[in-house]
Image (cartoon, rainbow, N blue to C red; front, side):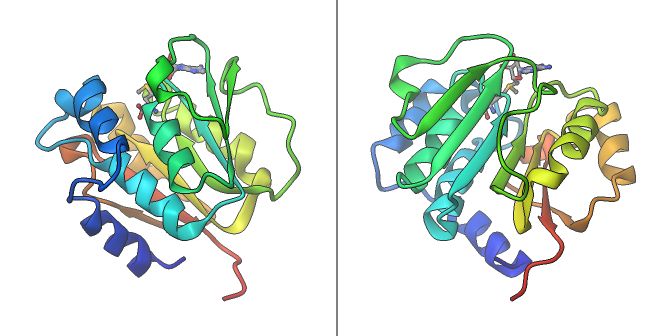
Length: 193
Ligand SMILES: C[S@@+](CC[C@H](N)C(=O)[O-])C[C@H]1O[C@@H](n2cnc3c(N)ncnc32)[C@H](O)[C@@H]1O
């Protein structure tokens, strides 16, 4: 998947989803309701991304109530989503059968094979340090051409510094899917096509 494809999906995610998931995204999630400047349509983006990409494995660090994991999962029910949080507060309505919920610190490495992750979403502690640590820990486990996402890259000064200085192994850009809170993307280098 190219930057152009991802930017097109981001534009498509401005529209409401034609599935039940829309109710969860727009009514239940406090991040949507309180989102700065716009509805948090990164939820819709996550759904549309996995619908098109069909990832075998997505890993999310930062489950919260489980809505973003539900979006990743529902886009491609044949794939597996692993989501991690140090606090358990997943809503029943956001649980999906193809999601594995792990209750642990994001820096405790999951037991997965190298280069097995197609989609990686870092959304835990927004101190500008944790996202970098999570990236470094999981980089060997992400496929070449895999998509990495970082939420809230402009929300706090330390996140802005992180994103500005971040030199990932791949193409880095921002997507307008989370108001002024910011949403960062990296396409990991090395895909054949
Ligand atoms: C912004 S919320 C995640 C939102 C969710 N991804 C979504 O889009 O709806 C951040 C979550 O990260 C979790 N968290 C913070 N620090 C963590 C850590 N060190 N390890 C695991 N989870 C952590 C918090 O408990 C919180 O639920």
